[in-house]
Length: 322
Image (cartoon, rainbow, N blue to C red):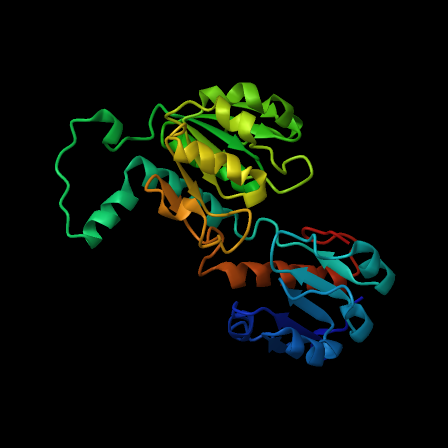
């Protein structure tokens, strides 16, 4: 059980997100502290009953946080949290899964449309003051989404919304997910991961929106990339290591696929020496798919609901991990 509001202390720990500013606007009367470094976190975490954290977590923190009863992850990923350590310390954990589903799905569609409409080329031409004329060559002309086939890998909250947005653009959507009993989420058809490779030759766009797991690590390997048609393009808003980066780099360099838009890479930041930076048919965004004006408020909504559940003695939290 958490203490009542007038005795509760929250700690917001993140290098950039402005949880404190957004929480103050709610006028809850709940005390909070905000830290932006691990040194500050070490100094303040002993005061906290609740910790909102992403990136700063260490599994030795429970040793210096005797009051801590709940950690609200500010991100969907929770691999950094040792479940056994938390259970032993009596600390509950909830993920931020779904917090940025709208933002990431919209980012994926924006990347797809940017490739279709050759927006990066237009921006490059603008910087050079070049007014490109009408194109007679079909291979260099802008295109449209209607009638294209999107193979969407991962049909969770993000992938499901990507599927629905693609359908709204008049596309055929083939969904791929770990458990097909989870439903099609608006896709025209749904298949399991083990059936992915026979589907790849159908893809005009291969859109990756799955979590990084043992099953999906390296899922898009050289063999998979080799099954894509030369006009196919890859959109990755999942995790960089879902794709064999050396294989896709080689395929792009040899123009064996038409292009790619990558919001995530195997190593982040993408090394300055990577050939991907200089490929005109590659669009790179710096893992900003989930960034949105609404991010902090979305996290705080989850946190407040989970605090209320714990204060009522409920056993189940939103996105409960521990």
